[in-house]
Each structure stands twice: as structure tokens, then as C-alpha cells.
Image 1 (cartoon, rainbow, N blue to C red):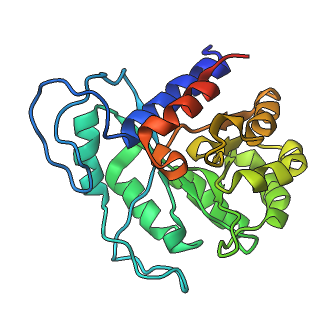
Image 2 (image 1 turned 180 degrees about the horizontal axis):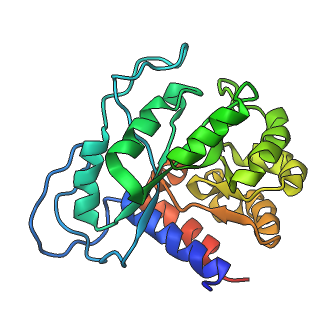
Length: 255
């Protein structure tokens, strides 16, 4: 069995590789991909079954949720396949973005397009039926995303009741919120019966970075044996790949 911290390191680095365009490059066939600044093959060859653990699909065939603003430019499953081919990953996790609220249709469409090597994280609220949860699981959904911001359809109060309902499905909950909010709800997260996943480095504040108090909170959760951190989207928290490097190393450091 792979050690939990080793798996965290491997999965995180795969996500970091998939979301970073500033890596050293090796010579190879140039391949332009929509929404990617790079064209060359990565110097670091992805291992067999490498997984990009966090990516979004946008498709204007699916309406944005009311109040979220204009629909982003299309970034379709077919576009992602080109990127996947270039970076060498063979598996991926599609995460429903805030654009669609609790409508997971775009994500499910992408799942059908990308096939059996893809899985998904959906957004649901208390109105979801048990039948719908089972349907989503059958289509490849393996978790639910809680963004926990004022405009999000999910709230802290929904965490425990929904976690109990999806426990038998083998799902986890993915938390996407500020470091301050993560610290504030530590007790709630400790009580959840399902695994917890933090995306985007657990959102440490800047310029605090590795000194942000969120590290102690998340480390306590990790030490319980069922919490993970995605080293995904470094520029979303550090504004540059270089500034994200110390944070990445801190999460990968054994304790």
C-alpha cells in the first residue's frame, strides 16, 4: 500500500505539473493548446497513470447560474484532451466550477466525453435527492465541492448533513475557501465522517505564505489520517509559480 503522505506528494505534484506552464522544457514536437501559454513537452515525464486532480470545463451550451456574471470563454473537454496529450497525464478529475452553481450538467457532459479515465467532483445542496446522489455516483462523481463564500450555493451548515448522506457512496468533500474560514470551521471538519480535501494549497494568505496559521489547522486534520491537500492552481494563491514553491515544499515535508 502506498503511504498516505507519499500519495499526497505524488498527487500534488501531478496537479502542480498540470497547472504550471513555467516548468523547464525538453525538446519535442511543439503543440499549441487553447488557453495554454506553452507549446513544448514537459521536461519531467509524467509517470504511468498520472492524474491531473483538479481542472474545470466550461461550455456555453450550458447556462451559467443566475447572478454569477458572464459565462467564461469555452474551455471544452476536447481542448483539455490536447493539453493532456502534451503533458502526459492519463487520468483527471473534473471539478464543477462556481459558474454553474449546483447544475453539474457541464461536468457530466465532460465526463462522458473523456471516458472511464475521468472522475468528477460535483456541487450539491440540501435539496439534492438520494436518487440523484446515486445517479451522480454511477456516472463517475466521487465527491462534492464546498466553496463557502457569500455567493456560493453551499454553506457550512450543509457540511455535516450532506457528509452523512454521501458517506455510503464513498465520497469526500472538497473545501475551497479562505484560510481564515478553514481555521474557523476546524471543529466541523474534524467531525465529518468522510475524507476532506483542500484545493489550491488550502489557500494560505499572502504574504504570510508558509507562516499562515492555516498550516497548523490543516496539519492537524491530515494527522487524523483522512485529509488531503491539492497542490493545484499555484497562481490562485501565490500569484506566481515561484512564490508558490515554498508552500508546495512545506506541504510535502514529512512530519
